[in-house]
Length: 285
Image 1 (tube, rainbow, N blue to C red):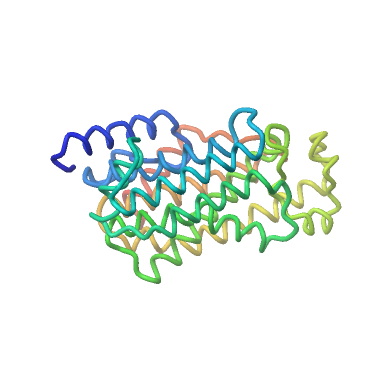
Image 2 (cartoon, rainbow, N blue to C red):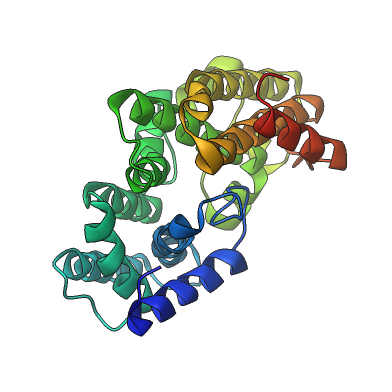
């Protein structure tokens, strides 16, 4: 952690944001090396706030897009070493040069959040995966840069893990995304192929067709997660354990999704968490 009280206070504020918005992704957990917890929290706080601009409240689309544009301008200020008086950007102005973080992933995140404001349907899986490339993959890429492990092979594996996590979240939140945000993250051409309509989703119809569609989606997400799983073995120390835990968590959620009927949000059990931790700590087990 830097000696400057300004940066220490900024990182502390980012850590409070991260811990106050805990989700499936174990942000700034105790498994991460201490030197990375503040920068990871700053990245998360940047993304969390921008995501809220796109999704929370009842502001019109134009106002949301203006907020995201301002966030991008403040990011440019942090990159240039002239951040606004905001803890997220003060922290990033220290982390970006110290860890040589590329600005592109931050801007990709903002691009994805702008898309959240304007896009509610995805015609193909390729279009959905392109969204994941900008909404999820940048986080993994930034973590690899923080840890000095951003080889091409590691970046490719990280992209697979992060996109798989994003897809798994979509698959467990089909109803929430539809009713709260008016979004469907199931490719329209695949819905048509399996004979599933938007009316089926709106009415939560548990039909054989819906079951087959979701089983296909979950299998594909698992395959993508397994494609990226070698990343956990390639990385050293606590960071490797963190990645293995993330992978194991995603695979466990896939299993619970397969066991549950469509539209049911699965809950992991105590045995799931113990199994995840054991396989993360002892990957040969």
